[in-house]
Image (cartoon, rainbow, N blue to C red; front, side, top):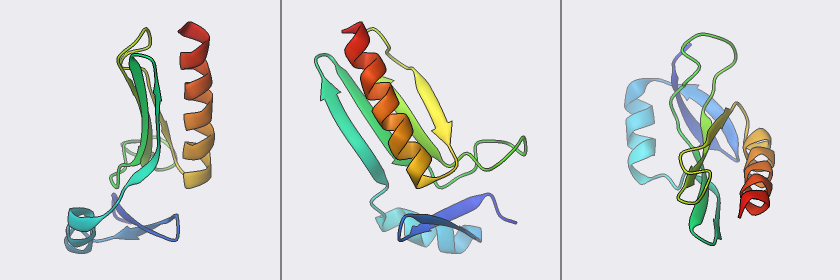
Length: 97
């Protein structure tokens, strides 16, 4: 199993590094993007497994840029988890703004 993933219809597919690189070069990896005051909340498909073998692949990431929660980050295994995580982070940012 590869640590490299591409998206097909919002589903992650494990691929070899060559197929991953070709896809990654042109891909739209954005799941969600929200701006609240000074903070930007960004959720993207990473395409690389950041679990480092410790559980299911973590291939999506939500990160806050700016504001009181600057650099807060969460990672997920599925598109659906990433969408829910984005919404949860947006709420956290709103509560601290």
